[in-house]
Length: 389
Image (cartoon, rainbow, N blue to C red; front, side, top):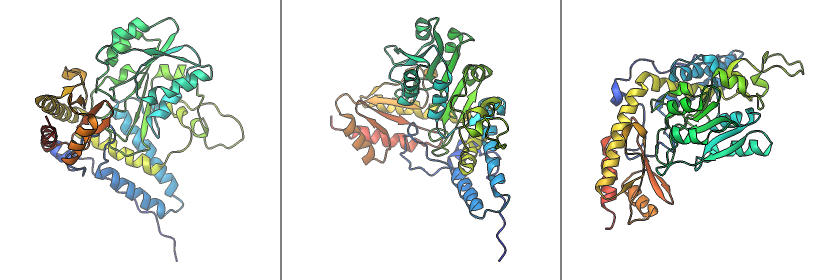
């Protein structure tokens, strides 16, 4: 019996989505899902692409692996466009944001790095591990009374030994949107600005070009599933970061197996450790392309509207909003407390009304996306008004 041929993969059409209603039609999360800051349910595009690529791999023949490996370039091209049209060579795929932060921490050979206090742990451990090996030393940067890391606070903390500043584009606790342009201005052109973009990429319009190293995962706001992400490296980052963690796929002449150490690859490819899943790369590309077709500005506008409605709803029932007051300072996260009710009890009421939220010991977090309807806000209102007075 002849072996089956690989079937060409058919991907969703790159045509217009027909507005945010058209965008929402790509998703199937429950009506009250408001936990995108933790995980963004992937689109049907991502599911279909994953299935098609897995089916192709199951019918493998002599051309299958090479065909599948082309998905990496497809994803890198989409990521480069999402960043505003940076060179594709400046982008590398990652399995998660943490891998990119470890590249930054272990790539800097000396000096100090400003790292905000109470950051998400993924922006803390890489610097701590690098410090224990005698490379860079993290210096804690205390946010202001509102939890913000402002350009002025960064300016005050700079010393002659500061070689980099590492911040989150959007604070995971409050949704505060960092002033990347302002931070870039105060640190000057000779220090690296490292940005963890996972809570803002694809849903918040930020000046990514202000950063030297941008890392993100695709499982949250990019809605592309786990084990997806990318890294962007500026010319300064490529110059300053030593390829300490470079693997066999991150070197020149990668296909020459001569038992010799090869020089690092040109561009961001040097941050590759090994081959990633081409199935995952294709799925990631599908997720990124949906964002590009819809437009970050349109998604961001919808998220801003739903975020404002959630804030008004929380305040209308006596809740205390911990997220920034000014719309230009916040992204899609609404952090809050109910002064007379423990978060776990508020969470129980939200769950009873079909609302999925992030629950922490000291607060709750709601986060809407481009597919979130007004009905989700109504569910929150009913849940909070049902709490005992």
